[in-house]
Amino acid sequence: MAKAKKGSKKKIIFSVLGLLIVAIIVLVVVASSKENFTEVKIENVKKRTLTQLVNSTGKIYPVNQVVLRPEVAGEIVELPVIEGQKVEKGDLLIRVKPDLYVARRNRAKESLNSAKSNLTINEATLERIESEFKRVSGLYAKKLASDKELEIAKASLAESKGRVAAQKAAVEQAKASYSEAQADLAKTAIYSPISGTITQLNVELSERVLGSSFNQGTHIMTVADLDKMEARVDVDENDVVLIRDGQEAIIEIDAFKDMKFNGKVTQIGNSAKSRGLGTQDEVVNFEVRILLVDKHERIRPGMSCDADIKTATRENVFSVPIQSVTARMDESEYDENTPASKRKPKEVVFVVVDKKVKMKEVKTGISDDDYYEIISGLEENEKVVSGPYRALSKELEDGKRVVVQEKRKKGKKKEQVAEASNN
Image (cartoon, rainbow, N blue to C red; front, side):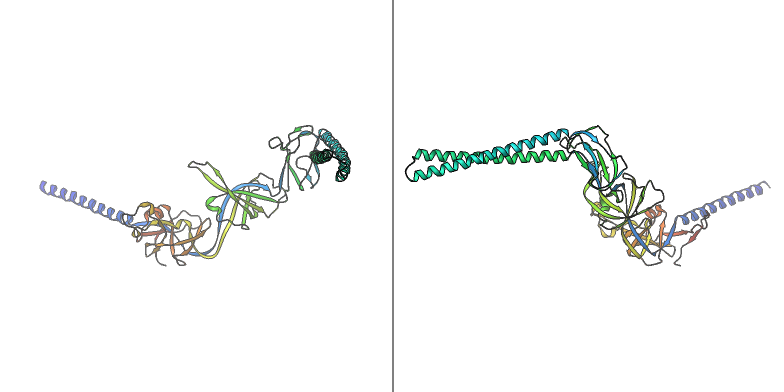
């Protein structure tokens, strides 16, 4: 009996061990079969209209704006405008005390009159000396005057002509001084060069200002035409080559929530604006100006804005999600001696066919925020892998077996895994 019980225990133990081994084998097989499949999302190749955008940031400025600085120094004695006031072209904006410039003008006028009087006297003297020279020359021809008398008459004539010429030069110099004094006097009054609004006023009545002969002079005020506004945005050097005059743009101004303004590119800068020069963070931008077609009376200079410039539009073209296009190295084109620096990746997508992915090289065109234009390499309604990122970037290879995630319906978190098919 003891031997029988002992034998039955051994059978039970071996049976349990056998079941465990079978379970382990089943788990390994199941696990290994799961590893052979990669879970992916797909999207069909479809025809769409794509608009390529270049995004940039900047500020709002008037198209026509004049910064006023006085050309003469002095005390402000008239200031008939205030900040925010609208003015017309030719309106008086400021007057600098003119007393000093009036006195300088009067002195210059007196000097001019004196120079003219001296010229008149010298010209009369010249006429008399010319008559004397003619008389002596006549007598010399009749041998009634000596050589010495003739030489004295010639010298007097030359000297008189020299004095007249010098005095004429003095008159011209006096005229220039008088004109300059008049111009300086006129500069004491500053008139608006354009019709617009006083957007900045930096001085007050009785304040002294410096003229432009002293460095840049005092910035007294800014006049701007607020009826014509533009966005000045900084565009990266890689994107500016896509921009052309006349391209349409959408402007969003931070101060106006949920409002969009239409614009048109009017100017593209030729000079680079660099930041962090010589460092790893160096940025090279170019200024692009965009005229705001839509008007709004509350838009003010200096407001921050974002601009989306429409650089290209393609209608009814094949397209795939941006994330579907990835890069792979084509090792077959290179031998083992080809340096890595000369090996170039190719653009590919993965198409699902019979539960497997097929890698296809594609040629892309423009893109918008979500889709790439496919110029060649795909046909309509082919199923391309659109995610997840890890699968596209690392896991997928030509011929890899996959399963496709079903799309979520009506916001439910339910995700079922279904096998891909050609249908």
